[in-house]
Image (cartoon, rainbow, N blue to C red; front, side, top):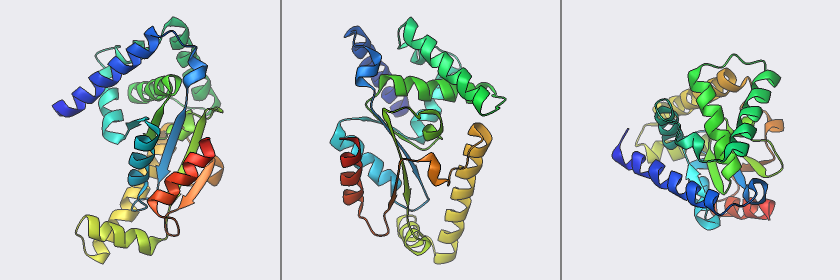
Length: 219
């Protein structure tokens, strides 16, 4: 884990601690956008733009994985809520596990708790990692970004400097791995429209227009 990721986590903890000291009821400031995306659909670009415009914290794959790793040896991340809040987190995780008939290992338990903790603090955009499966309350907007294969392939080909065939293989492999992750840890279908509140096609919408639609949806 790089020092920059450690720094991001430390800064995040400090922001959460400051918010806790303000003694605001948790439900008043929870506001979460989860973004799931097809490879090459510019979902990461949309996530960065919406987090910047809304002033929300952005949690991507690297940050979430670093949080899981950090939490294996320290409970600091999970103790940024008061006792009442942590009881709520434990209840949500327990109910989710029972509802989806899961047998969670250490990794999945920590991931569930971290996603739920982020959800209870609010003001965040969570990219991937099945966050839409765990955070389904009325304060969460679950977004899925898609695009036609030809457009995604062209985007990956240019951004990663690949030939057309390798770009296609990259997309198929990435999408399969993401779907397998969601199926394994959440027993859910990453592609099912019913798992989202809003689906946006960046084949017809620019990233900026997608952000505008999301902002309208949460206003």
